[in-house]
Amino acid sequence: MATKLNFTSKVRAGMAVERASAEERLADGDVVGIAQRDAAVVTLAEVAPAVAPVAASDTPVAAAPATPVAPAASIGSAGVTHAVARIPVEDVVSNPYNPRAFYSAETIDELADSFGKQGQITPILVTRLAEFPGKYVIVDGERRIRAARSRGDKHIDVDVRDGLDNQNLYLRAYHANKEREEQTVFDDALAWKKLLDDGVYVDQVELGVAVSEDPKHISKVISLTSLPPYLLQRMAQNRKDVGLGHAYNIKLIFDRAGVTVAEHWLEQVIEGKASVRKLEAAASAEAGARRIGPRRTHYQSRVQFNRPDGVALGELKLFGDGRAELNLKGIAAADQQRLAERMKAVIDEWAAEMEPTVAS
Picture 1 (cartoon, rainbow, N blue to C red):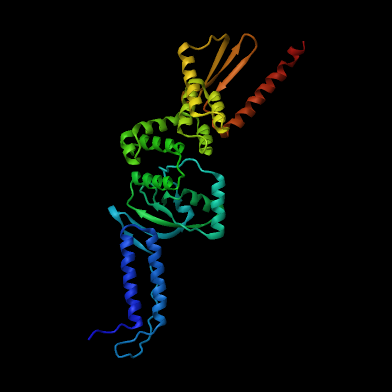
Picture 2 (picture 1 turned 180 degrees about the vertical axis):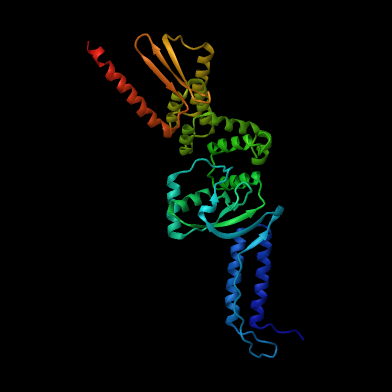
């Protein structure tokens, strides 16, 4: 004769099914599955004791207390383990191969405001590396940690994934950003150059396979790193208006005509006054001017400036008609104002010394 299931037996059976389903999701590395499993176990553990289990003889039995649920952890594919935890913010360090280089202060402030109103909804993804003992390295979540730090938060929720190498460190973050449409070619330019410089990928062909891009595309994007950092940042800030075609031709103009001309054309693009075709024409014109040869100069003397490591910074030309032209390049945006103030002080001092001569 078949045994009739009572209410408690059904609850216990449901718990078993829910646990089995959750474990299957955990085996696939499903972070959402972790949270769902924990929520399901807690809910069922609270419900089951509320109903006195009934034995086959229908004799009441005292309900057992609910068992606390331990933090979720599992072993996923390729030996990668993960667990959700809450750790000190000061123990988190940035991804050395972060695919993003440019962040908007405005979006960080918006996220910090969201943290204040709703709390942290999604844990940041971190791993542990031998190069950073005692620390957790961000795989995905740089904006969230910046928001937490701006608020002065002491702790943050993390999903710890152990067993990741440098390629995984980059690719997981890269694909996450691509899915959110946060990645730009300007971020790619700096990240791809570092990956190749550090030997994480042997060459542009191997890197292209990893990110599903043609090596020619990889080469074109990396070439943007020859632009001054402040120009790249300005392009990234205006990524809706400045695409790879614009940026690459501005890079060619920069190579052929210098930073001042490149800045002019970038402003034209941002203002909607220059298409890719117009930039191509400008770049070709600059190339033609170089083939013809430089215009004859009539300066009397020239002073060249170099950094201590030998990299050229620019030059000062003095002309016979009384003109002086100073052309510098590669000056970071943060240093430009300071340099301008020092130059003004020098020129003002020189002008004061020259006043008696001018008056006579």
